Length: 375
Image: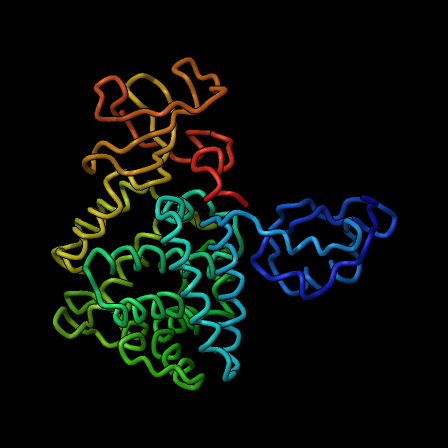
């Protein structure tokens, strides 16, 4: 079969989706490698203008069906969320359908491989802009909690919609805030404190009529003791959707690296949330969050008593004994093949949790979770 070169078509490229080919320029030089995640519409314009790919006898390469991947699905969700939130901000009538599509992608990823979906929160932090990634991560945790609480399909849909849209009013400024080294003050702080109300206004104008989801957006920064914003509501005045989204939001924010602070270790983030239970968060829901994520959430870097260093890949019989894949031996050398360790074994019990810099591990997610974590 002869190979021919063809131009890329705009219909073959979607923000958040991975490239299925190496893309070359007109002179033959490599522009972008296969597997690159398309980050913006401007990238698509550039690739369509300059990009060429190999095509087998005119067969359309993008008809190839790759095995389903939770990682790839969540990356796609992030790209589509940007388009949907832009639609909400512009008041477009198709925005609601776009949000429903993003929510369906989050559900599909969690159903395909919940372990991978949760691992992405800790291990896929370079994928796209913080604001979009954070909203999708929050939706993953909120979905896991809603299912554990046996919420109805309608209630779960409201939780997902609230998580995905909670920061729609900060869309224009979120990345600037992410890269601001100093604590926010003055107009920026006032902007932050009114974003729940402005978000609800934008969603209503775009045709969102789910009152439970709208209440979740409005109240996701309220605290049990009335110290939150924008309305200073207390425990019984805060809806269940908001309480779920608030917990998921706080966990995901704390384990994400910011320009002005390092990411918290996931076990420390959960500990802090539990300690807040007497004041700012619903203690019962906080215990559900801990139960579902475990003391060592999936994706956590750990050092074992044996001296090996690895990654938590799935829950164990209880929250303190997850399953780990070791990647580094006790003498500090990289293992050729990851070794499965059950931490309920005394020799392989967890000694300490490590940050990404301490662990200094380099690996692809599909090396630990297989095809469901492939790009």
